[in-house]
Image 1 (cartoon, rainbow, N blue to C red):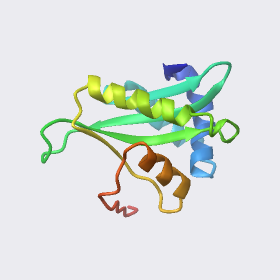
Image 2 (image 1 turned 90 degrees about the vertical axis):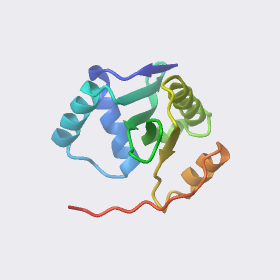
Image 3 (image 1 turned 180 degrees about the vertical axis):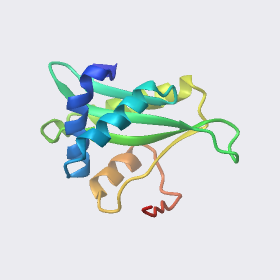
Image 4 (image 1 turned 60 degrees about the vertical axis):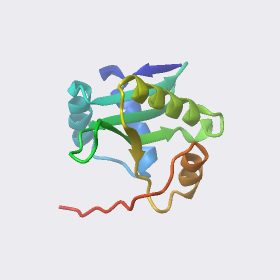
Length: 139
């Protein structure tokens, strides 16, 4: 079942984000960011859970000057490794897309690391197209 994340889910979401990043995040930093996201009306965090949390997806709303309507950006999508290939990612993605329609978003976009070839195939299979380059610079 897909549910909105709560403050009580923070520890399990932290572990999921570590799996996504293939690294151990700074817990204090994560906790601060999680708390900010929970208070931000333009951030949505959804979990796929039954007896435990199996996956997570986030949606960040942006208002760009060159768009007629708000844009949704998927910031994170992660399914625990042992639950992959069970269509959980697809269910979360469909849920976010329906949320986007209800919010009357113009589009949903995302960035995915160059090495995440399986993720790229997943997104393309679900109708996402590569039409932008994503650039970043550490500050």
